[in-house]
Length: 377
View 1 (tube, one colour):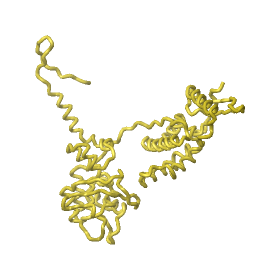
View 2 (cartoon, rainbow, N blue to C red):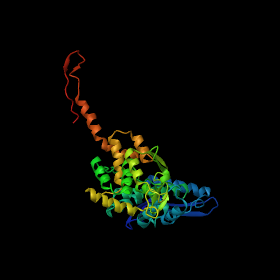
View 3 (tube, helix red, strand yellow):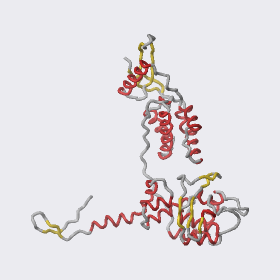
View 4 (cartoon, rainbow, N blue to C red):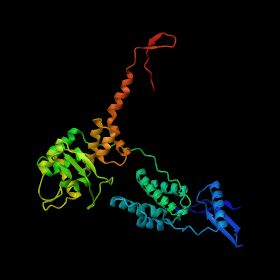
């Protein structure tokens, strides 16, 4: 019997469990005999039988073992990071992938052969990560990278198929934002500090990220026509393109123009800089925001909440989502739709409008009766 189940050690958990195996013993065209015992990449009877058929076909054609280099996950992961990363990956993305590999994927899957990583192995990995207390969102990020690595190994013909990598279904957390009054109080708290007043104005009225504020130059700003180009961003001291990889144009409103004019200096090209003209870092911004929050009597929050507030107030004012997407520089509208919940008042009005019914409804027999309120409960 060439297809059967056997007890073997699980490469992820180390526990003994049943695996579908193939055991092929056949005579090759040149008269030699060949025996191959392998774990089926698809852990089902049908999957193992199909795997056996493909194996016999490759043995008969003489292609078996010639086109595939068998690697363990840790070996290919190293090659993936050094040779197969998308060239458009930003330094922050590369760093994030390195952390996921070092802390999660390699410790759990590193000893597995690439062709041994199937749906069962992936399910066990997810279960182990959950047991360790990791959030579903964090595990999903790990699964996304795992799927990318397996996809690349399939393109290179290192595995015959890409196992299904199912992410957890999680709902997006409700995005918080500052009220108009809170933004006004924060803005007022910086009245004696023109530089930080300008930073607040650009974050709350233009939606700039912290890295984009740090990377802003005076040459990006037209105070006469009221325009601003977001062309670069800072990440851990490295200047690169904005998060989406694309520059974007943002009109300046009166508040932002007034704040920038009050802050205008001749110390150098950077809008936010130290006395010697050198670019400010994230710590400068964080310390200043902490001081202004305390002065305004506001709760703890970071600079990014001002960007959330910018987007949320645009949606509350019924600005089209496509316009909000362009102003935020989102690569897809789905990212912008996270702010849709702030338009709940519109949903309330829409449903409430159904209370208005005609006084009478004409019946098929020609009679008129009072309209009844229909309950959908």
